[in-house]
Image (cartoon, rainbow, N blue to C red; front, side, top):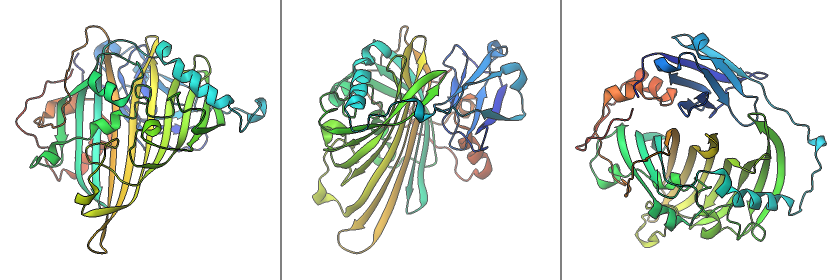
Length: 404
């Protein structure tokens, strides 16, 4: 489906404070066509001719859902969109701290995955962004349109089983660096996908560990799209590979957002502290003898969101930031590294999905300027590129398939 040059561009802010609202869903009503606000609350969404009379829906946990008539907003004008916060008085509920009530709520949410989330094969079309910073200097930036295939759907499985049931390919790519080695071509997309916690068992949704290994309490009650949402905070008392997904985890805690209506998980926030990290994936071992630098601190934070589409829940977005600090084994010099990565689901296909049997660990897709001119990517990347134009997007030999 082709897009015209018409679009809506704006910023979503808190009605009371005026502060930006990041990672809000911005979609055309009754469809999955949309985007999300960036970390400054800004968004841009292309509007095709057949959607000019539709309504734009803006929703995020903790706020009343906003509706914008497309005809009133389409065009070059920059819009300031106000969202009204949802306030729930905690005095209206009975808080049973230190009980197992909230552990049971998480268990019920895990058991309801088969009823709430799509079962069966599907495709996700994804926007993917990854940036690496070394000693406060950006070293690499990559953006991509990716197509993922899942042969089973949301049957919660272990990491190895999910690995066999999922495949993906890079359709379009732009990056700030040339591919000169296998390391340059690697994408680290698998690490990000492991935070699709409804699909993977190695997290707080593993019912084998929810009572013995977790302290769970109620943080607050909020709402999304008119439905009440319980925000449960958790701390893992005995973190390990099976209940966190990370082989070197030392601390694991976070929050999980569960809708009261149907026990659906719609948001996950977590913090991890680890003793080491393998470049092949956070669940794998590293040969520490071959490491020139000894890890001092490794900390990362992740946010995963889900939303409903045609009666079933699907992934909406994943974003994480990982910070490393290393010390050279033969001296006192240190170095720091920050990885920021995110993916946003831009389209879902459940009817006759394209089977992708393998995973593209190495990408060498050439840059296609026309594709990026029409793609609904996050606005801050476009502004950054237009402002600096210091590096030309580069590509390799492989010709990727153009998306939409």
